[in-house]
Length: 220
Image 1 (cartoon, rainbow, N blue to C red):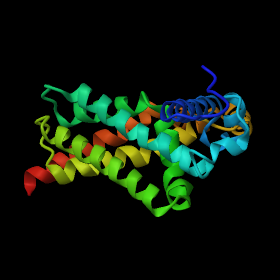
Image 2 (spheres, helix red, strand yellow):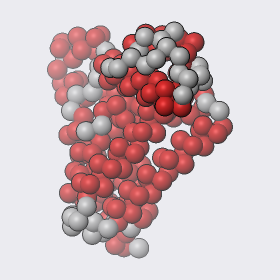
Image 3 (cartoon, rainbow, N blue to C red):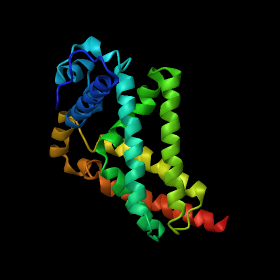
Image 4 (cartoon, rainbow, N blue to C red):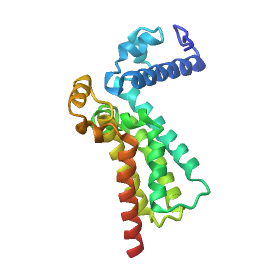
């Protein structure tokens, strides 16, 4: 990773430093999990003093929330690309949605922490900016799902996306067990059977939601 200048004097220098901090946080989160990311490690990775981060992000939570906001843009781009021009049935739609999240493990991890701590720990304007970006992505994906011809109306598409992000956040954590749980799963393999199958479990759940939502829309 290119090392930013020790003093960011121009707007360009500041943007380079901000990008470097986000990149470091992303790398650490992928390597160790979101809960293990610390400001000291982030700044150390880019060769800065921890106090320098405060000029760009007021807290660890704000830094991670920005990664989550970027994750929404990534999910929208990936899902819309996967759906573009395709006519799908509800089961196929569920498989595409599950696949789009399986390709974004960091976003799945972040979704667990957004609701638990990140949103509530930042300034009102920062929380508003996050919600605005997430809502815009959610609305774009809703419209794209309706256009697939799978029989989903807007309410059904929103239900599917809500189930997708909620289940993905939970199942992702199960699929990354602690060393203690790994030992336990080695001793009792049947307990690990469901926990470690992230994409398969997510797809199964979303198939049921998509089929049910399409059936409900057809009966409305």
